[in-house]
Image (tube, rainbow, N blue to C red; front, side, top):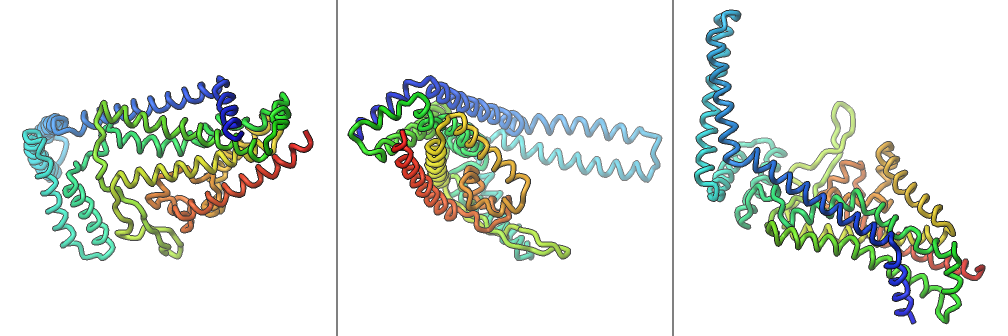
Length: 402
């Protein structure tokens, strides 16, 4: 009988034009992200490729040579100032010419990026050895480790600048969760229960020989499954499409996560500062799995919250109003109140900033050391249980009055 309820909910879901409109908007948003990534890649190649660097340096050298001639023929400045300006310009010109030689060498051997990376590693080792300050040394050692991981795993340093499947996937997850997920899920699921009261369809559903709890759970299961397909399956399909066309990219690129922070005192004032050398590197595939887990966790608790509000309210308009006000209001208060930001680790509506949570930068933004992925997981699980429990209790009690 429960399968019959699920089938009935699926039929009602795909009978709504709203389902396809919201899904279409999400697909359009994914397409826009592909275009943004592709444009960013083209701009990177245009302004940062060895060829572009050679052209820019050649142009700058010509400008500085004209500037040098102008200084030499300028009679409005003193001999002493002219001498200083000429020396500075000549020094700058020599530096530009050295850079041009290096850029041309890179242009001639653009595929030999490993040699350049090895040279960078050797230079970084010298920096580490010459650094005496303990905190600075830790930061330099962390940078050395990053470079070495790139070399050991055969990953170019500029890998993140290309529109590959893995880069698009991560951008999609982090941006969608932060900007679209809460509102999108609200629009998609907000009236799933409350809308039943208006035409009285719920009354006819409840006369069937099935418990009220099963009726609500069937709605909940379809809400979760359809939302997961709408968001996560669509993201995965776009990842495959971009990967097939543009390449999947390197899954072993090192990514810094788990930054730690501490209080420091400057001029009698207390500030939160990053602990030197803190954090650790994980591979991009690990970061992707953790990001997907946090997105799924946020999706589950958000859908359960929507179910609760939709169950409590008998009006779809009231339901949508309450949900949108809760989302927008919490974000407004978050941006205005430092006290609220410190309490935000215990409010699930602020779990959408996935990248900041994984990297640890969320601590700096909120001022709360409690904002960790462990807190996010615990509060999300507890909130889901509470929201679902309230929904079942209210639904069962209200049904008797129909």
